[in-house]
Image (cartoon, rainbow, N blue to C red; front, side, top):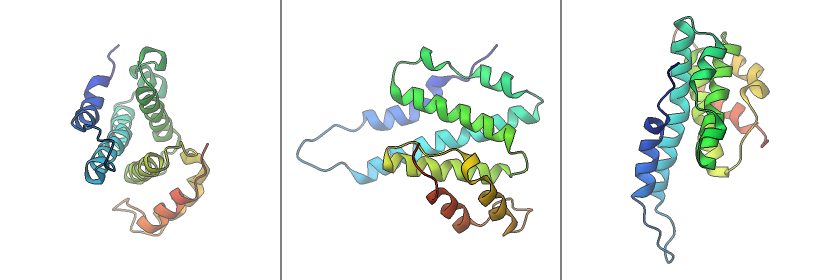
Length: 161
């Protein structure tokens, strides 16, 4: 069984973070922090697309989840968190087939930003599913994008776990 190369997922974030040298007399470089946070959110969102592609190929939820590294196989909390998000994305792609891929992708991106800024994990998609389904109805279905302000409001309603 092949596994998603976890090192590839982390190299962008790790490289950007390693380029930062801590300076005890300055505040963090907000531009660099924003770039790293954006890369982290992109990693999290891309797993939505990967999970959807595997589902469309006919893979089952269990087959896709089996490709992910086990949490006990990784070395640090960052990797454990990322694996947890990847598992949630796979489950959401299989559980909410009536939502467009773009809606789930944007949801994960917005949640990733909010979790990164607040340093707290938020409730899962299930907590705002009815709201997201309603958001999709507010736009032209062909674009699959939903109403961005509506989606943002749904993410803002999420509570920390």
